[in-house]
Length: 317
Image (cartoon, rainbow, N blue to C red; front, side, top):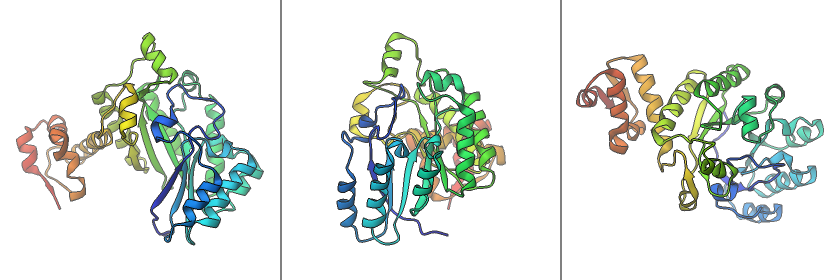
């Protein structure tokens, strides 16, 4: 098993993107306004003393031209301490080209994160995202068959998206994944100032999820993801003062991920033991005791017990 490395992220806002999805504002999400150059990446990595997982996020990495992709990969491979590896996010079809894929796979790649907000053609079209689900699935299979370690980034609450369609998307990706260990990030859709989605909100053509709706939908989604063998590593965007100041609608909450996982775990616990008792690692305690005992209230609701009784039947080790 490979050693887990501390991540060293570089954000490339809209880097490589050929268009702009209606919900996306990378500068606000990442807090980075300009692309860091390969030379800058080299200078930062050269100062490190321990191996890292060098990450390129915030755009579609493999949509840069061939020479630019190679420059960033060279910076990571040649300047980071020995033993470092590389992770990046990209659109599934970006590695369809044999020459580019061969180049990328010649480097020490830890993981390729694939942006798959939806596989519903109508939802993708509403988001101004390239809308050929069959091609997306073929591209995922191609990378799987090349033994590339993959992660998927999915979304809920998109224009025209239903909970049922998002769960179907998850099951479709899981069919390709099979028994492989793939990470999963889930992002409930937020309305950010300066996006087309913000205009849609103002015109009344888009109704965002509330925090409670996102927690329930996300919890059901994550519960299913765990059942299908995914390894969730994040739910919700990283909170920042900039993001908070620019959100105009949708499920914005500094601990949205915690609420989503509380919902997921409550569902799983009641499914395994309808009335308890329930014993969990101490690392999961905040999902139940935090945010006004949100998780305990969920367990009470789903088990039919009073919150006080749930607390008696819930323990941590």
